[in-house]
Length: 90
Image (tube, rainbow, N blue to C red; front, side):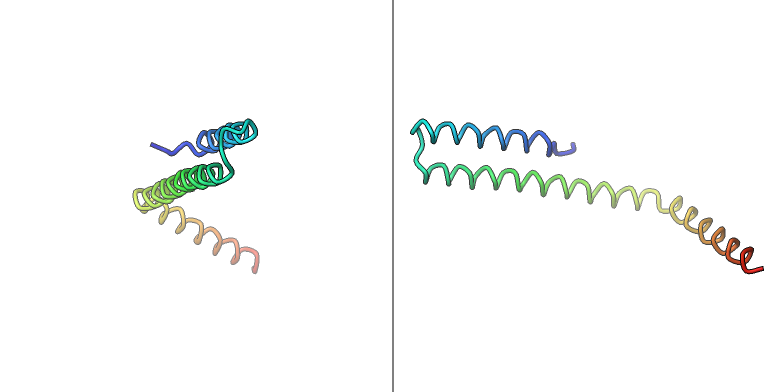
């Protein structure tokens, strides 16, 4: 399943807003806020890494699963380009 980076970022900002409100009300000390922010940043960073890993694996799978198609399209593109070059030089 694809990691929902958009939702994770929304949740991150929501948690930061709650932390700010708690700090302004005096419920949390600055050290506690710093620790919580570091924890939230680590969670969002992990979500980003998961999303990039998923994207990389999906691209790799797409390239390996459709190798013959990609090679065929590449071959046709090279032949068409060569034909155009010879047509233009004549």
